[in-house]
Image 1 (cartoon, rainbow, N blue to C red):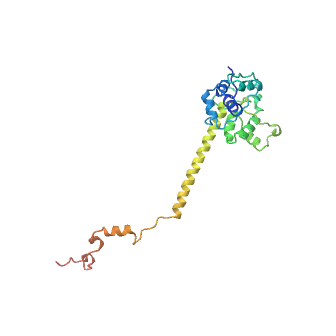
Image 2 (cartoon, rainbow, N blue to C red):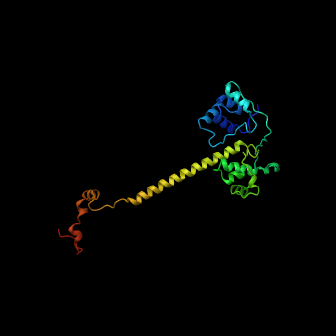
Image 3 (spheres, rainbow, N blue to C red):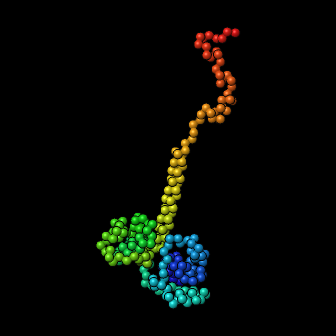
Length: 237
């Protein structure tokens, strides 16, 4: 059975925008029912932008309406001419000449929906360069007036798995930075509190000092007469 181009993103959209059962969504996307339930509970697919299978030509509104009316009906994907991306091999990503003109549209989509991704991540994801990303970002690209945000997966520039991986990496990096910032703030707060309230120095009236003096032997607390004799001769018997 054919599956949607972006199964997880499609499942996100169907869960959020339809009344289909978990079983129906799982059957259409080729995923497990528990995965669909986890998406509905917000446990997985965090940060993934849902993809409407109707606008991408992979499902008709008529079939969706029938499935929502009949929980026993399992939808089938419609034939589409959307190009499928190939698995990436080792080395730099190669983008066919026919698809290179689509990269600015893909960059614009990523900047809009996933601003947390770094320029380096975007460059690796769709096989572009940082100057191109910057030109799209600040709208100095030579074709800026005609750039329209389009999903790089539907353009065939990367796979859904590649996009999801970069989103997860970015989320983990952000969380690590937040934790490091919190640790630094706590350390600074402790240092400021210690500077504002320094520990008091012991004095003669300190009970601990007095207690230590009382515990000392008498000969140690008060020097003997022999020790104060300046003649240097031993005391008389």
